[in-house]
Amino acid sequence: MFPECVTCIVKQTEQFLQRHCPDSERADEVTLDIIRFMASAENELKTAPALPSFLNDLLERRCRLKKAIRDDSKHCNDQFLLLEETIRNDISKSINPIQRALLYTLAGNYVMNHQGALENLELSLVSAARLRPVIDDSGKLFDRVRKANAVLFIGDKAGEIVTDKLLLEQLQHPKVYYGVREKGVLDEATVDDARDAGIERVAQIKGIPQELTSFSDLSGNSTFGRIYREADVIISKGPSNFWKLHNETDKETFFLFSTRCQVIANLLKVGIDDPVVMYGKRYQQKIIGVEKYETLCHEL
Image 1 (cartoon, rainbow, N blue to C red):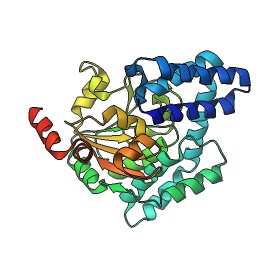
Image 2 (cartoon, rainbow, N blue to C red):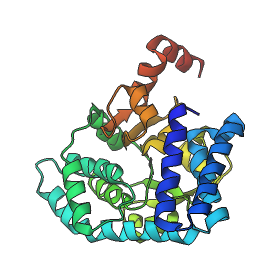
Image 3 (cartoon, helix red, strand yellow):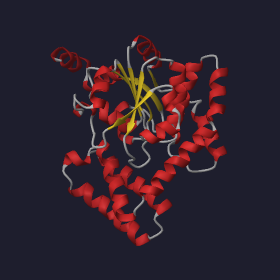
Image 4 (tube, rainbow, N blue to C red):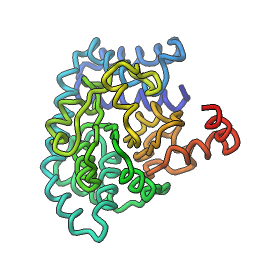
């Protein structure tokens, strides 16, 4: 865990508590629980992908917020769905529809868990969709998808999964799996969210095991493990999934996200909220070095 993770997880905690826990004494207790956990837990329990599950369980145990959090996610999904045709029409009118759809799915990741008015969401999406990726491997992404026998798209948050669907419509691949959480963890999208968003019209929806913190830990005998092995190309959405996949050296992996995570922004030398479409092997070469990466690939 990085020091910045402490600030991030405490901020997330405060946001949920401000919306759903008017009892200030209980809210303070939850914040103290978070700080104690950060100070005492074993390192493997404090990795970035494990923190949302811990926070989700804590909020439910202390404040019974599971229903409130799920209501937030449903509201977010519903608002994105109200804008679906507007966004689809904008994409269809573009000179390059597939690129425009990609910008919208990045914009969806930028907005995250929107709980305000619909018109504010629309303005935020349109504004964010004007931002060009500061790392842009989209050409390679589209080329690899065209050549792939099977594609696995790993979704991130509720709401933005609607923009993922619009990108998948443009990719038009005959065999796409869409992976999301089996059950709710904070505002991360679930199988039910994906069904509500209509993802099944463009992909086969598959549940990701709750306890998973790294895709390298997938059991080869599990349903999702077999799908992961089958996929020629993996499209990973959001910073949380980046941490679960950033060490993947065997698969053709692409990361799509807005860099809200300070640690990732520093790692990639980009700004906060910058959109990124990054080829996994570019990351490996950039971060661990070309020579070490080539040696690793040779050993594999």
